[in-house]
Amino acid sequence: MSSLFPALVGGPGEQVALRFGDGERSLTYGELAGAAGAVAARVRGADRVAVWATPELETAVAVVGVLLAGVAAVPLNPKSGEKELAHILTDSAPSLVLAAPGADLPAPLAGVERVDVDVDARGTGAVPKDRATEGDPALIVYTSGTTGPPKGAVIPRRAVATTLDALADAWQWTADDVLVHGLPLFHVHGLVLGILGPLRRGGSVRHLGRFGTEGVTRELTDGATMLFGVPTMYHRIAEALPTDPELAKALGLARLLVSGSAALPVHDHRRILAATGQRVIERYGMTETLMNTSVRADGEARAGTVGVPLPGVELRLVEEDGTPLGAYDGETVGEIQVRGPNLFTEYLNRPDATAAAFTADGWFRTGDMAVREPDGYVRIVGRKATDLIKSGGYKIGAGEIENALLEHPAVREAAVTGEPDADLGERIVAWIVPTDPQSPPGVEELAAHVAGRLAPHKRPRVVRHLDALPRNDMGKIMKRALGDA
Image (tube, rainbow, N blue to C red):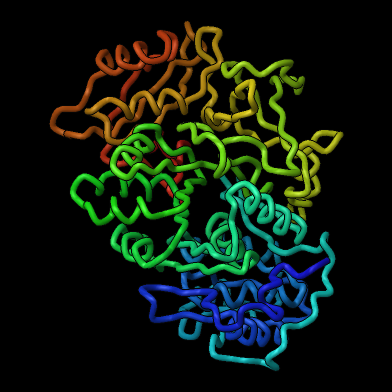
């Protein structure tokens, strides 16, 4: 197949490709070609190579080098516990681990040969010829493991290329764009979209190292055109905007603000739009599928939706028995199934889990529940396992109730789950972080608030107050942990 990174071969050698922190560490395309080429020469012939994915320049160079060599990269989350890390290493069996010089690696990596990444290396000065095929593995990314040990999703090079090209079409993404983000680099969002995306386009990426509104202001004011973030980041932005006019001005300069990895509450959409004149667009993807849908840059940015299927992606909603919904009305909830070149090929060493994930005709069962408008726009209402509540004969998505709760001034954060109820089957439970812990809203007040915005059967029957909601590294609420909160 053609190179994943055409700009590294005879591209704009003096253009800055990567910049980390506040600008003190950067590489041009010419320098990246040399440093990644040196990594490629070192790892060529390996089966899999682990990358200690800290948010710094070495991680980007390592992953690009491994891909240039036609080898599969296994990004490792530096915050993983030793038990989880040991499982991933046993399962993926990497022959090497690439890390930044001086990085302190935990005990489970002691038995894996370590190679430090030299960002100043120039190798032979020539990028190695890409001999990999489109079906060859590019990445093995481990899922969160909410129902057991993490599974390694084998993502082929075809999926990386087609997803990034489809997003380029949807977002009008070009070599002129400069992306700023502060996302982790062990995950699809931060690594594939946030690092490999700009490099495939021939543009630039400025990684903040650690997310902060000051860094966002600095980079957007200094010419960055796009911002990628997760809802936690945009919530912090929305909270800061009333007292930070420079941040509002900087966001107003952006060409595109993109949120993903979880649903962005409608309340935050509205606050950011009111302060900046900018609409945040959302997209929908998974580790196993990369990206499936997005609001288009030239389309209508409807708050609370994730847009339409990307080019090349087939998407349908199905009933519990797998029967496709006959028509889309914006109200009927179904499970999302997708099919296309963006899909992973298998769960490593798990043929049973791989077979269970797909229908006989190749549709991937996402486990995500959604409604779809007649014009194709998709609105996610939650995960089948944790966010679909069956109450009083209705199928109810937790997401729309959470959005309604967040519109109440006494609610800072909200999560909604179901719990067994002898009469209703399940009753709706609202987990609330109150704006004022000394005066938390009660169940009657919140039930009336939700019933007035949605429907009476969607009102919470139980309200539980928390100091904070449990979240993972990507800012997603861990609903399975709420019972322990």
